[in-house]
Length: 202
Image (cartoon, rainbow, N blue to C red; front, top):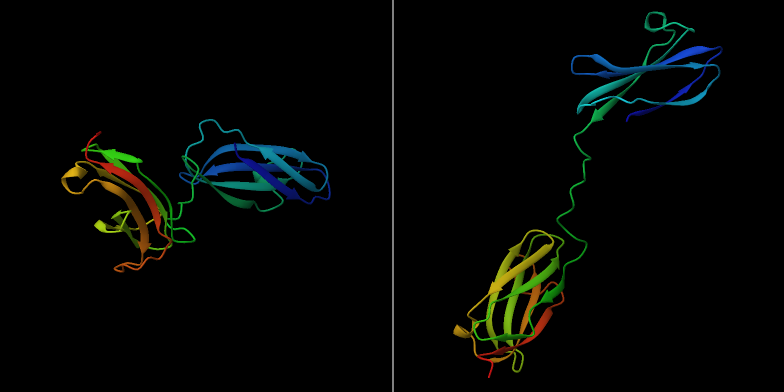
């Protein structure tokens, strides 16, 4: 419901008129008035049935007692009103205030060809490259490395299966970090996730 606040100065009793005009067709959709005996601040609630989205204008003016538009003693004070389908929510920024890996999740034990997924959440200040490396946590030998361009703060989910076809059984670790575009040098603190990789349940 539109609520209009008006401040007026009068020397004698006047009629204060408020009208809401639809600028599409210049039709008055609501008007009301209040008898004002002294200067001050006043507000009007303007219940309008089935108020449609669009552009409107609110007009306020004074007239002598029991008089209207034709006998107005002031020119209307006007304000524009925009009616929306829904509240406009400011678009959330794609970027954060610093570059960092917030967390990394992966099962503690992977057996055989068990399917799994590596999840990493990250914050970035501008477009970056995200590196994910698989290492032997005993001697830090690198088994493999992946690079993903990332263009906004978010999360990456990497589904994995049939790891026994490519990697030996070992105590392993994922290492995840961010770098500047087309660079391999870490920009952020590396985040790791240790896990045990078994060929079978035995």
